[in-house]
Structure formats: structure tokens, C-alpha cells
Length: 114
Length: 111
Image (cartoon, rainbow over all chains, first blue to last red; front, top):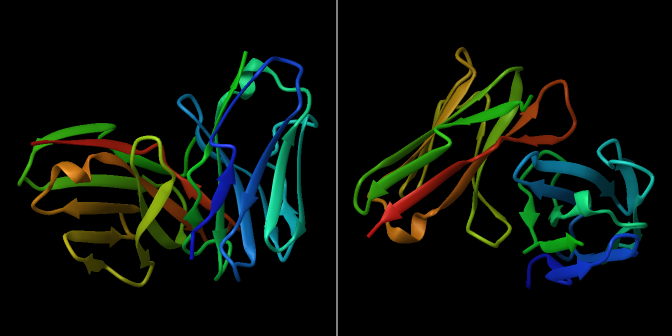
């Protein structure tokens, strides 16, 4: 298996623009997680899905952030409009056994908002 | 504050030495996991230890768990330059429904 795939790997955009991050989980995994990592706040869980259904989005910082999982092999995290404080590395992870079991992380998307 | 807190924040050793990192947490857990993150990469799962286990081994890794002290340690024996990375503990609280990651220990192994 290719593991969790994320695109793009790097994104540079200007404040106010829409940003869409993409993730393909490991085939057969029922859980998908979106995390954000910054020096100041560490690794934060934004939202997770189980069988394509959002279960816990309490970590989504504000309404500018939205996430979807239209099918078992694809998820998006959208920021609209983007702000400089959104600059971070965004990770997607998946798990085949449970929300608190082993998670498999993608390589991340480094987002820079100017 | 974070459920899991690693100590030390940074550790620098010579190749061949052992590296020990600690993780303390605040509330009861079901399991505790350790992950490694190389620079510019995603986290990679290393080992999971359940609350009813006291010690676990995987290759050069040894993990201990002391639930009475709410702490865990990760020992890497005979370290290599390739072990240079950040190491995170992640806890599964009995009262929660998600993994909570600590802030990590940055390990540097000098050749």
C-alpha cells in the first residue's frame, strides 16, 4: 500500500484566498483524521471521520475551516478565506482499527499564507 | 495544557549511546503510544502499550509504563544517527475519545 497520500505537499497563498488540502487514506481504513501542527500549539486534532461521517469537529478553529469526505478514499480540508495565522503543517492520518488505535500519517501539507 | 508532556524537550547524544525520553500524563488512560517524526515528514507509529502492561520491547526500543506515576519512558538502545527525530507520546484517556499528543522530545544523535 502507498500509505496515506496528501496533496499538495507545499502551498503558498495570499491572505483571503481559498485553500483546499486533499487526502487519500489507506484503503480499508474506516477512520480519517485531520491534524494541524505548529511550533506554538503542537499537534492539534481538527476533525475526524468514521465511515465518511464527521464524528468530532470540535477542533476546527472557526467557520473558515471545513472538511468533507465524499467517499472512503478521499477527503478535503478547505480554508476560506485563509489568514496568515493558518500557516502550519496539516496532516491527514487514517486508522483501520479505531479512533484511539494506531494511526498512519501522511507526509503533510506545509501551508504558508502571506 | 497537554495530556502528555515529554521530558526532556531536547536531547543530544553520541552514536552508540542510549537515549531515554519520558512522558507524563494527567488522567487515566487505556493505552499510550509513541511516535517518531523525522524532519519534514509525518509521524510514524513506533509502539503501543496498554494500561495493563508494564513493559514492551520492539527491536532497539523499550517502553515502560507506570500507571501509578502516570508516566512512560521510551528507551532507544545503541542509538544511530538515523534515530535523529522528534518523539511524541500519545495517550488514549479513559474519559476521552481521541488520541492526545504531547509536545515531543527532539533527539539528536551525533555521528
